[in-house]
View 1 (tube, rainbow, N blue to C red):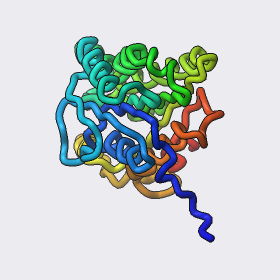
View 2: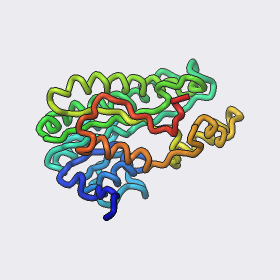
View 3: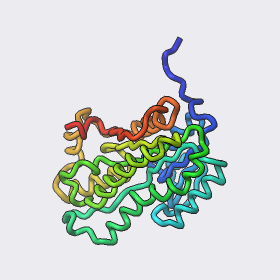
View 4: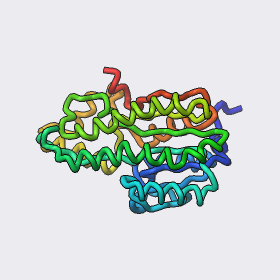
Amino acid sequence: MSSKLDLSKELIGRRALVTGGSRGIGAAIAQRLLDAGAKVVVSARSRNEETPAAATFIAGDIRTSEGVKAIASGALAALGGLDILVNNAGGSNGFPEGAASIPEGEWQDVFALNLFSSVRLTNAVLPALRESKAAAVVNISSTAATMGAGAGPFAHYSAAKAALDAYSRVLAVDLAPSNIRVNVVTPGPVTTVGSDAIRKTFGDAMGVPAEAWLQSVPLGRWGATDDIAEVVALLVSDRGKWLTGVNYRVDGGMTAR
């Protein structure tokens, strides 16, 4: 008898919304939930070749109140309710000259994308989550939230993700009486088209080869999108039914240094 867990039916009947789900980590999370039997909606500004074919796609700009409302209403209409929300959309531009060179407009845009989108969308779908018997929210953060060294070009991003972490902790306690679990997953340096390009661009600008980043990862390899997706799947499943208010750092040991 095989001892391998069969997770292919673990999320049958669950309904999930994954923002930024057209590519990279978001697409991997969406596919993992689909593989476990969930019905999944992904949102992004546009489709991508990585967008899971079996997911329902809703185009929208998560940075605006109007965009959030459209995504929320479209997802609830498509799914008939909601059990799982993964606030994955995020990112920023970098400024090699450091924190003081970041324009105010960039600060506002990055906070809109990395913090306020999660706040607004969670609030928009909260009534549906309250009706679920297995509600779970996962917010995707970044090691930039806690690692200040060398993060000057992304100070706005670091601050927004740190705020997301704090918001998530408070929200977990606030929603626990409604049996809605809230957790954070913090990826380390994961290989995606976007993150690889950022490492190369800023590595070249600062004279630090991209491969030098690996020296900060005790396990000695880049993360894969599946590494992140697997932890998200655990947190939204019944296997994680007593887990809330925790930040899971999936980073090969980088933040343990």
